[in-house]
Image (cartoon, rainbow, N blue to C red; front, side, top):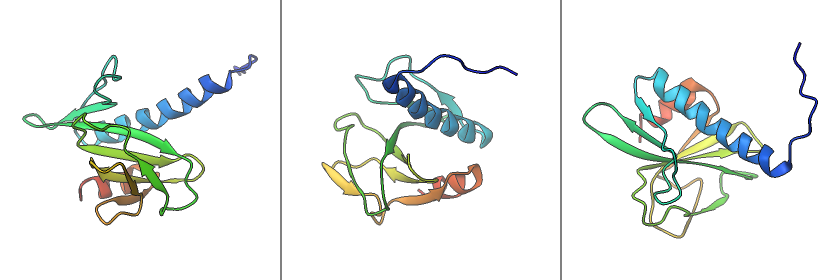
Length: 131
């Protein structure tokens, strides 16, 4: 069996983990019938994913947070970029939160407009459809 015999730098490993959450969302949305587009570079527009049902397009930002609970306050890092949906994943647990893009500087994860889910396709899609 293959074994990784080299050490990965901590910054690289963190980037790999963050990207894996984006890949998970891509997979879940594609299985639900969405067209999913991944920008080659997202620094200017801060868009991790662009999804479409045909006539409509939505911009998605995927973030990971070290949250000890859903009262954790998150910072708006996409100001001015017209993000439609932000998906937060708790790095240190098995849950996440789907939020409509917001304009405030910060907001608690348990805000009334946010949808909490357990990290599974079924749970994610159930909450995503209720946005």
